Image 1 (cartoon, rainbow, N blue to C red):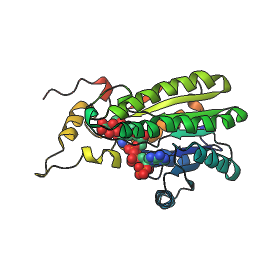
Image 2: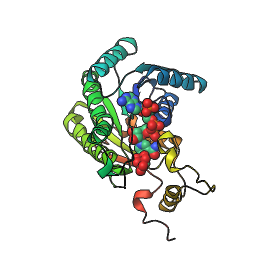
Image 3: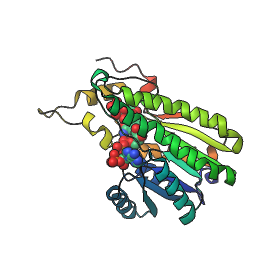
Length: 264
Ligand code: NAP
Ligand code: GCO
């Protein structure tokens, strides 16, 4: 049974994986036997990531690549295939959020979030899939969100992107399942990373951020998730243990989506 969860001999690309959730998932893949490759948006971040993987005792190869730039993605995937090998596992992790009330949000800001969080996974997936078809197998994992299912004030662009990513996941599953490519989503709940740091900042009087208190009351596990909470589910979706799982969004949220919330 352990063999079913092994990633030995597999090449995994995790986008935006210099730190945060991507770094944790890539690290989990490495511990499961995969050769890990990652990209980030600039050399400084890639070097930061390389140092972090080295410090964790893990071998990783990093590339500077903006997932929204189709030519950069084509060139990077070709370089990976030449230097490392054809990609078996793709995790579309790179993403941003802009928390702005919708009526105050510029169209440019809305487009930027959609570009990175939805167009990026489209561009990287369409570039990687031909190699997977030639290999006769592939795993694509799209990092979705609670906002793939729920709305919230100030995150209109992000929710639209992550809702679209849920359906892109299902469409890739539908269109390429016949090539033994499984495409699934991983939907983290609220995870303690730099992206959510503003929601956890202590108030001037030292009290919890209002959202922090709200989230704890909305989570049966009564805690924020950690990036490490995602590594087991990610390895499952990247491994042979999920070969008949396709088009599924696996929520790793401590029970948020199932829970009405603790009575005040
Ligand atoms: P994070 O800490 O902000 O890390 C995101 C990474 O993606 C950063 O390294 C970022 O670089 C990189 N990136 C941004 N734009 C890029 C681009 N155009 N090309 C390549 N890389 C780019 O975010 P996180 O919390 O780890 O989240 C990772 C993913 O999980 C995102 O898709 C996010 O939406 C999703 N997610 C997060 C949570 C959560 O609670 N944290 C929950 C559900 C889903 P920069 O440093 O330059 O921005
Ligand atoms: C927010 C948070 C969330 C998390 C995550 C939840 O402002 O609501 O940033 O969007 O990042 O996506 O699953």
